[in-house]
Length: 124
Image (cartoon, rainbow, N blue to C red):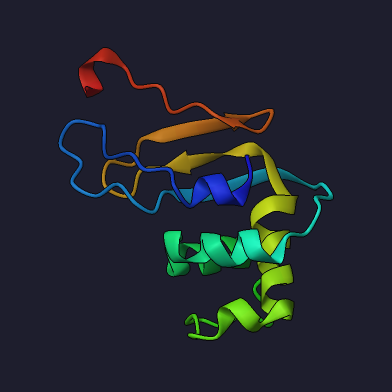
């Protein structure tokens, strides 16, 4: 699971959950895979992301050094920042681990890089 995907996952579909975001990420195994850098793609993606969750996930994988805690307005022209975000969002791959709903504690396993977000009948 790419950390880009993690930024969009929520457990809001569980009965009684109001927000369900961000999920708590526990990493068991991660890999780094190379991907072609596209500065324009990353710059256009940033406004769609929750910056606090990006920073949290970067910290979890040990890549938060040099990453600002708050996003600046000139991020689109900061090539170093865009490259760092490219690495964090598209090259770090969580292979094994789990996601936890912040409201209910419900665990969603990540196996072979795929988060299992299926709910039981009584949770819908």
